[in-house]
Length: 212
Ligand code: G16
Ligand code: MG
Image 1: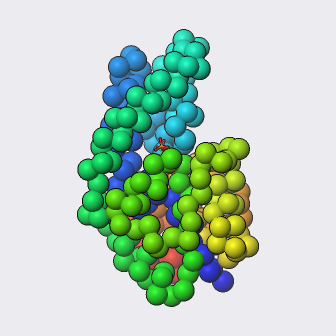
Image 2 (image 1 turned 90 degrees about the horizontal axis):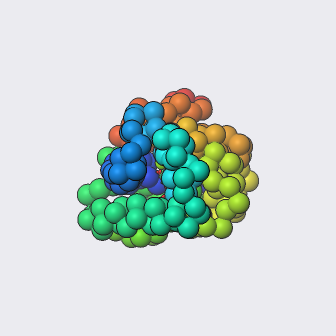
């Protein structure tokens, strides 16, 4: 039986995927890289430097920049992104997720956050959601990001639960792979998982139990 829930953040809890897209797209186009929907989807859940490399590869310019130049490009994207997330308020929780967090808390589930974002603690504060979570995995401490299982394995450790008692919620293909690799139940939101839900509005314990 499931006792704990590991949450992805961007695109699952917080309506911030659109801000990542805006900031990356602006940087990509300034470097002459053509934006496309597939690139946009593939960037979901991918950490900052891996995202930059994916964009540079899409434009076939990955060898054009030194490591120091790449650091500067990633920092400029993050500066633009931080301006966008400074405007977040509790109204920017994705629809239905506050109710779901309340439902889980009332039913005694333990919750943790498995986000690739180094901005996760700031965003959860802005949204007024920090207190729901036992802990947040620090993505800087990981050997490998999503799709590697490490981040979701760590999210279960934080809860002191064996992975078989944990379900992970994700909106990205890379994240679903990470959850499955960690031997947890994958709940896909707008992406195929062991349980698949169309959007955050559909998420509830009853909707999940109906598919397992
Ligand atoms: C998120 C986003 C990614 C972003 C990554 C790193 O992951 O989906 O698009 O590149 O975090 O974010 P930052 O640059 O803020 O450290 P998740 O795992 O919350 O979906
Ligand atoms: Mg996500």
